[in-house]
Length: 152
Image (cartoon, rainbow, N blue to C red; front, side, top):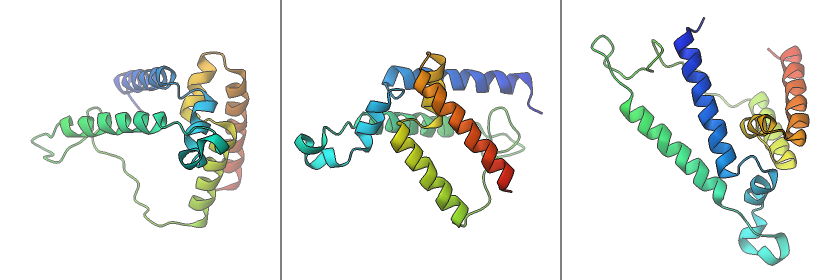
Protein backbone atom coordinates (compact mmCIF):
# COMPACT_ATOMS: atom_id res chain seq x y z
CA UNK A 1 0.00 0.00 0.00
CA UNK A 2 1.34 3.39 -0.97
CA UNK A 3 1.78 5.96 1.74
CA UNK A 4 0.22 9.43 1.68
CA UNK A 5 3.46 11.05 0.52
CA UNK A 6 3.65 8.79 -2.54
CA UNK A 7 -0.01 9.40 -3.37
CA UNK A 8 0.38 13.16 -2.99
CA UNK A 9 3.42 13.27 -5.25
CA UNK A 10 1.65 11.04 -7.80
CA UNK A 11 -1.41 13.33 -7.76
CA UNK A 12 0.75 16.45 -8.18
CA UNK A 13 2.70 14.82 -11.03
CA UNK A 14 -0.58 13.89 -12.71
CA UNK A 15 -1.91 17.42 -12.31
CA UNK A 16 1.27 18.93 -13.79
CA UNK A 17 1.08 16.40 -16.67
CA UNK A 18 -2.55 17.28 -17.35
CA UNK A 19 -1.85 21.00 -17.18
CA UNK A 20 1.03 20.56 -19.61
CA UNK A 21 -1.26 18.71 -22.02
CA UNK A 22 -3.84 21.49 -21.85
CA UNK A 23 -1.27 24.30 -22.25
CA UNK A 24 0.45 22.56 -25.19
CA UNK A 25 -2.85 21.96 -26.98
CA UNK A 26 -2.50 18.18 -26.89
CA UNK A 27 -6.08 17.87 -25.61
CA UNK A 28 -7.31 19.00 -29.03
CA UNK A 29 -7.88 15.93 -31.24
CA UNK A 30 -7.38 17.98 -34.41
CA UNK A 31 -3.84 18.86 -33.29
CA UNK A 32 -2.96 15.22 -32.64
CA UNK A 33 -4.53 14.05 -35.90
CA UNK A 34 -2.57 16.76 -37.75
CA UNK A 35 0.62 15.27 -36.25
CA UNK A 36 -0.39 11.80 -37.42
CA UNK A 37 -1.10 13.19 -40.91
CA UNK A 38 2.21 12.14 -42.44
CA UNK A 39 0.91 12.85 -45.94
CA UNK A 40 0.96 16.54 -45.03
CA UNK A 41 4.76 16.42 -44.78
CA UNK A 42 5.02 15.81 -48.52
CA UNK A 43 1.88 17.43 -49.95
CA UNK A 44 0.12 19.86 -47.62
CA UNK A 45 -2.15 21.14 -50.39
CA UNK A 46 -3.54 17.65 -50.95
CA UNK A 47 -3.54 16.19 -47.43
CA UNK A 48 -3.57 19.23 -45.15
CA UNK A 49 -0.71 20.61 -43.10
CA UNK A 50 1.39 18.38 -40.86
CA UNK A 51 1.71 19.72 -37.29
CA UNK A 52 5.04 18.90 -35.64
CA UNK A 53 4.13 20.39 -32.24
CA UNK A 54 3.48 16.96 -30.67
CA UNK A 55 7.10 16.01 -31.41
CA UNK A 56 8.26 19.07 -29.47
CA UNK A 57 5.97 18.20 -26.55
CA UNK A 58 7.40 14.66 -26.55
CA UNK A 59 10.93 16.07 -26.72
CA UNK A 60 10.24 18.28 -23.72
CA UNK A 61 8.88 15.31 -21.76
CA UNK A 62 11.94 13.20 -22.61
CA UNK A 63 14.20 16.06 -21.53
CA UNK A 64 12.45 16.37 -18.15
CA UNK A 65 12.64 12.59 -17.69
CA UNK A 66 16.37 12.51 -18.48
CA UNK A 67 16.96 15.33 -15.99
CA UNK A 68 14.91 13.54 -13.31
CA UNK A 69 16.88 10.31 -13.80
CA UNK A 70 20.15 12.25 -13.68
CA UNK A 71 19.32 13.78 -10.29
CA UNK A 72 17.77 10.64 -8.79
CA UNK A 73 19.84 10.08 -5.66
CA UNK A 74 21.96 7.08 -4.81
CA UNK A 75 22.29 5.95 -1.18
CA UNK A 76 25.18 4.41 0.73
CA UNK A 77 23.23 1.19 1.22
CA UNK A 78 22.17 1.10 -2.43
CA UNK A 79 24.79 2.81 -4.62
CA UNK A 80 22.66 2.28 -7.73
CA UNK A 81 19.99 4.91 -8.25
CA UNK A 82 16.51 4.37 -6.85
CA UNK A 83 13.24 6.32 -6.90
CA UNK A 84 12.83 9.07 -4.35
CA UNK A 85 9.77 7.55 -2.68
CA UNK A 86 10.22 3.81 -3.26
CA UNK A 87 12.77 1.17 -2.32
CA UNK A 88 13.47 0.09 -5.92
CA UNK A 89 12.50 0.78 -9.49
CA UNK A 90 9.74 -1.55 -10.64
CA UNK A 91 10.70 -2.29 -14.23
CA UNK A 92 9.10 -4.86 -16.51
CA UNK A 93 10.97 -8.14 -16.78
CA UNK A 94 9.36 -9.48 -19.97
CA UNK A 95 11.25 -8.74 -23.15
CA UNK A 96 9.38 -10.89 -25.67
CA UNK A 97 7.04 -9.57 -28.32
CA UNK A 98 3.86 -11.63 -28.55
CA UNK A 99 0.52 -11.43 -30.31
CA UNK A 100 -1.17 -9.72 -27.33
CA UNK A 101 1.42 -6.95 -27.32
CA UNK A 102 1.10 -6.39 -31.07
CA UNK A 103 -2.72 -6.46 -30.97
CA UNK A 104 -2.81 -4.07 -28.02
CA UNK A 105 -0.40 -1.67 -29.72
CA UNK A 106 -2.46 -1.80 -32.92
CA UNK A 107 -5.72 -1.15 -31.05
CA UNK A 108 -4.12 1.74 -29.16
CA UNK A 109 -2.86 3.26 -32.41
CA UNK A 110 -6.19 2.87 -34.20
CA UNK A 111 -8.05 4.39 -31.24
CA UNK A 112 -5.58 7.26 -31.06
CA UNK A 113 -5.84 7.92 -34.78
CA UNK A 114 -9.65 7.70 -34.94
CA UNK A 115 -10.41 9.53 -31.72
CA UNK A 116 -7.46 11.91 -31.62
CA UNK A 117 -6.96 11.07 -27.95
CA UNK A 118 -4.69 8.84 -25.98
CA UNK A 119 -5.68 8.19 -22.34
CA UNK A 120 -3.76 11.06 -20.68
CA UNK A 121 -5.06 13.88 -22.88
CA UNK A 122 -8.56 12.37 -22.81
CA UNK A 123 -8.62 12.53 -19.00
CA UNK A 124 -7.29 16.08 -19.06
CA UNK A 125 -10.00 17.05 -21.56
CA UNK A 126 -12.72 15.44 -19.42
CA UNK A 127 -11.59 17.68 -16.55
CA UNK A 128 -12.21 20.73 -18.75
CA UNK A 129 -15.69 19.56 -19.79
CA UNK A 130 -15.06 17.93 -23.17
CA UNK A 131 -18.07 15.70 -23.97
CA UNK A 132 -16.29 13.89 -26.81
CA UNK A 133 -13.49 13.03 -24.41
CA UNK A 134 -16.02 11.79 -21.85
CA UNK A 135 -17.39 9.37 -24.44
CA UNK A 136 -13.82 8.32 -25.32
CA UNK A 137 -12.95 7.70 -21.65
CA UNK A 138 -16.16 5.70 -21.13
CA UNK A 139 -15.28 3.54 -24.16
CA UNK A 140 -11.73 3.23 -22.83
CA UNK A 141 -12.98 2.06 -19.44
CA UNK A 142 -15.31 -0.43 -21.12
CA UNK A 143 -12.43 -1.74 -23.23
CA UNK A 144 -10.20 -2.12 -20.17
CA UNK A 145 -12.99 -3.98 -18.37
CA UNK A 146 -13.49 -6.34 -21.32
CA UNK A 147 -9.74 -6.92 -21.62
CA UNK A 148 -9.42 -7.74 -17.92
CA UNK A 149 -12.36 -10.13 -18.16
CA UNK A 150 -10.92 -12.12 -21.05
CA UNK A 151 -7.15 -11.91 -20.52
CA UNK A 152 -4.66 -12.96 -17.86
